[in-house]
Length: 561
Image 1 (cartoon, rainbow, N blue to C red):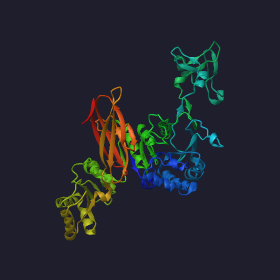
Image 2: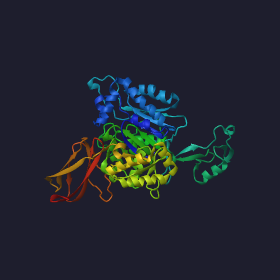
Image 3: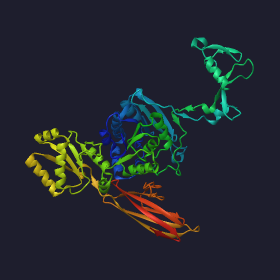
Image 4: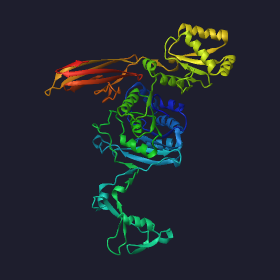
């Protein structure tokens, strides 16, 4: 499965996904809490989802979530696991009425308590309850045969100071452990003498001799029972428990913070993903939100799929992925409700052919040469040809008819006799001559060629336009110039947001913004004397985008290239 960000309702999209295709699911669904707080991005997709889940109180919320978790259970492989993140408002109902019912009580693994904030007091506001500073993360597996990688946390300083109190000449801290074999002969432990002491030992004589040679066996005085030197730096740490208070919430100045109110720390997702999946496994997040799950999965060399109804959620996540990409990053696709005509019309030819064939349910041709101009075949085996062109003419029809017959002559005549299409031709538009030739072939030869326009297969729209104005606000006492940038995007769908890359690398052509989500389009920034290349991106409500590159020279006054 390819890495993909998908804009849309997760229930509808999950129903189209094949069963047992993902290894790990993490979901941080909208909490059953303060209604106003739950509208975060504020765009149409999120508001629509918000209204759906809130129309009937907690029972409706549980029904809304349960329907989706049932699909997630279907998508999980037998060795897969799910981590469902929730707060106190509905955690009991979620466990009893959703997770226990769908996954079974026998597949409950842990109830993780994450300390998400420091202590606070609402006593002055009259609150008569303890402060809520934790979230719950319910961990269930699909079966007993689930993947689980033990995670360890560091020992606390009090423990290491008290237990690992000895230090070698080279500075390595250690403690002394027992070498004697518990249970003696009844447990099969060997008996022999070492350093003048006869006991039942944990290890064979050969193993003990090797430890002595390595300086790992210590005898405090003649006649004392030898002990094993256990180094602190060789110990993995404390096996992870179900109380997670060592991962701090994101502060207002945290580097990874993107302005998403319920954004989770990357360390939290790192722990979950490393515990329940391996490299190459597929991680699925049906509520992408700020994108942390797929961003971390991408860093950890997992495949991933993320879904959200919010255009901003998908585009902000996309930008976060761009920001961390390098030569070794796996490719990913973003699937929107609508596609930009220019992008489809002028993208890589083979990539477009393969993609559009798959959109009609066909299988693309892996060969690029010697294929008789055939780019794929339908489920019934009929050839498909793709033309990235407008106003296709009669000559293309004639050539395709001949190619269909050469491709599989028996199938061609079988479809001809049955009155079925002998082939499918896909293009952006067809000219009058092509349409007339299709009619002639059908009437005179009973040869049916099906014509399909790209906009009949996928919805197409025009991407937004973008203009950027600059205003010199003057120099400060250090000689740096304050420059105001005003980005103005226009789209019939409406403008969703802007993003800014203040150090755009034209040679690589990769947009890596420092500001991911600007809803005003106005930014003010200081510049020293020098030359700069700046990129700004506008995103509309369909998720389509346009970029504007600004070349700026600052030397006394600003000059735009």
